[in-house]
Length: 138
Image 1 (cartoon, helix red, strand yellow):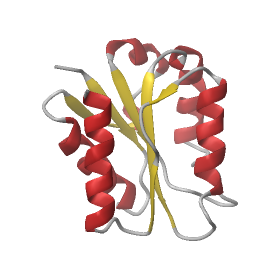
Image 2 (cartoon, one colour):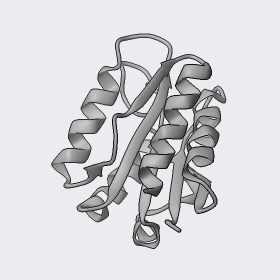
Image 3 (spheres, helix red, strand yellow):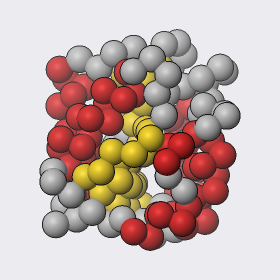
Image 4 (spheres, helix red, strand yellow):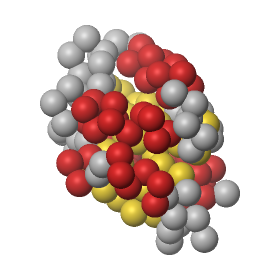
């Protein structure tokens, strides 16, 4: 069984709901972790990691908690299987495209397409999130 971390930051609860769906898809080996409880030293403990963060401000990652932790993790992500997810309330998903490129640039392996949704996840998004979790577990 793969050991999977589902690391997220959520302001409104939408990204937290998304994290729960990812963990469901990943199965028994999934552990949901708020970003404030995760650090770069933990990356090696997991076979795969799902990172979840909503778009903030001018379509950027949340800057006070999530981004510093993610930046610290980047050197350890080379060769690591990861997936990305998050919600947004405006814009067109530019934050996710930028984040995906950042992950590729640091050598991370994107296990599947990222999942984004406008505001709260609906049934179709939840299905995509479960598939994302499953892609990390397999």
